[in-house]
Image (cartoon, rainbow, N blue to C red; front, top):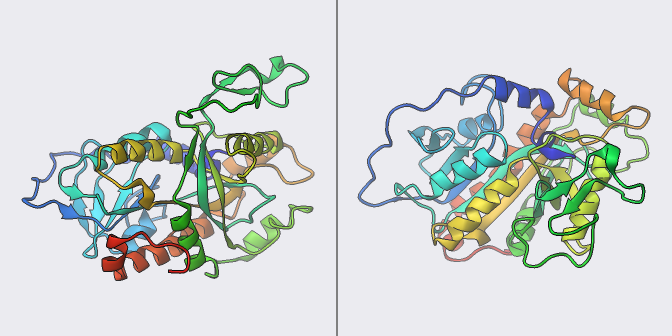
Length: 363
């Protein structure tokens, strides 16, 4: 599968995160202020390689440094402390994979120190892109977030010969069996399309960083016109799952899975480990009146492709990720902050309007 890192980041970063977790928080939460702090934007990131500032960046660091998130609040019930700036922008680092993301988002959402009822949420991270749709360093605004974990699975060596995959929707007996069960239980999260359209229009012409390394990497994907382009901003669907998957057949599964759950309307473009966990937590918080689910955006940028280049195998391609033979990580991290911050700055600078009404395309 294409999962978040690919899906979330190149495989070596996943290993770094698992092998070298951030230090545990100590102490207790700061006292609850008489009036909760009103938050304008929550920026949700998933991994950091070391310190919050001053070393090799993960998803969190560029936001901390460029948005001047200098005020620290312990968050003992979450993965990492949160940071905030004078403009009402709060940064959250959830930790890698669905469970940590859901728990950390819920910890923040229930924290009485913060008023999040009018806050916009921006998930900003990297992932593995589908070369049919995107190039390295490109940015994808999510229309839908798909969950790739909620399924039955048969080992590939035992799949019936007429099945295209060993993944079967829950409460179905074969892949892509119709009708799609209703109601869904977390398989699909559709974002506010008016807000997504606004964010896309606001950022679609932002120039993204290119490099010789990116040009060399994408040149290997002969036959994939979009993969050969310089980095660009687009919109599509993301697939979230806890397994780091890779390869042409898994890419095909992600596309088919997305079309199945979106009634043929969706287009899978990029993988992401945590987004279904984040969306589930935000859904519950919305039910509790703590957040507004209509104010949520998901932005994923392409650090690597989710499948092998023509002429190589999936195993060879996956091995190359572990050997750091890719060039998309730094451009993707930069693009996530650069594109996302245009939206953040617009919300902050027009707060009276944005607090009162959610922007739509053309506004």
